[in-house]
Image (cartoon, rainbow, N blue to C red):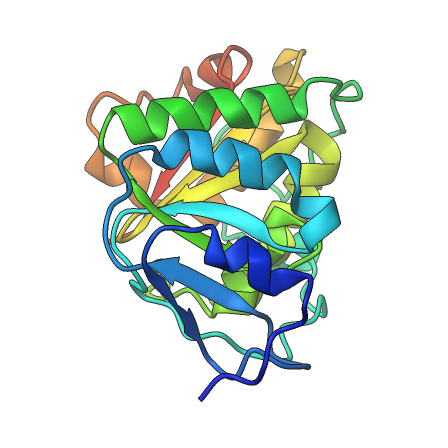
Length: 241
């Protein structure tokens, strides 16, 4: 059974739709709550909870299914490193036009509207029916959520710690914010897309190394112009088989 919650968290959770706590909910395990079913006003609730995340210590997520592919863990840490992961995945000819691993894409300009972009994507994800279940996870930043939940949506390609390392790097460089998960999908907003072609081409290589499935499974994605799309998009979609 979950341990008793702090007096500060109990009123918050009592104000949520029907749901349940997962795991032990005491240190070092994170507090994790998930709704029992899709929530009608999921986007509005997500926005309110997102606004309060610093106060509550709980980061909101929109999920396609309740408690899908997750198992809260206590020691998720930040030992993994994005650059090391990308370098380890690089093979000869991995991503034209680079013959060798080009290093990380340079950071974009400082993002000033990351929260606005995240709220906009939450509205779109819920309105489209992609994810309407609600979750809260006790992490300092959204990028930590896959590792803290031991999310298995991308298990055929990378582990949750590696994914969180990559997401933390994109948070720092491009104003990324994690909005939610599908069965094998990840929904993230991007407030500061790349602004020059070389930067965008290197970032396209990072996307391929993190999630090659989208380039094979989605025929509308053009390898040769994907970097141009990255310069315009404020949502990055990832899907693993």
